[in-house]
Length: 153
Image 1: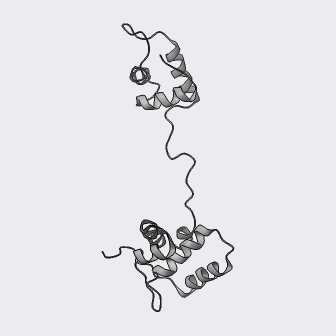
Image 2 (image 1 turned 30 degrees about the vertical axis):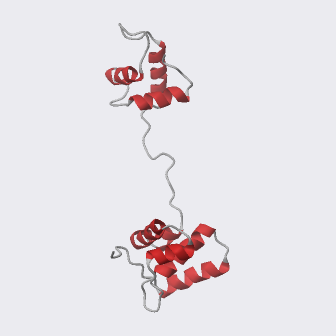
Image 3 (image 1 turned 45 degrees about the horizontal axis):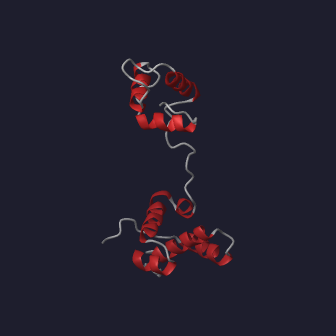
């Protein structure tokens, strides 16, 4: 299979990576990533190892090697060496404190006619009907109630 992301290091990048490995003052993950880049380097007079060969030599998965090569090509040396900073919230919460309070008030109210208790899907539908949220799943309602130690039954 032909490689999509070809690592070609400049002389400056290569010397920086070699110095990093020699110094040993960095985290093991960063040093391993530096070694991956050095072994994957396709420049003249470089090893240009195959992914499988690199993964066996450095005891990492081939997917890791592919991922490091891709990040180097797309985002640069620093991105390939360092962990990605993940945002604290990858999604926007549907229920903030005020909306949670409305959910709790709904749970504490009388269930609809013909029902003995609130079901999660009924609660989700009622929140949409009341205009508290545009859409919400019963699973979000369940997690929210679990978080506040509430039982709709």
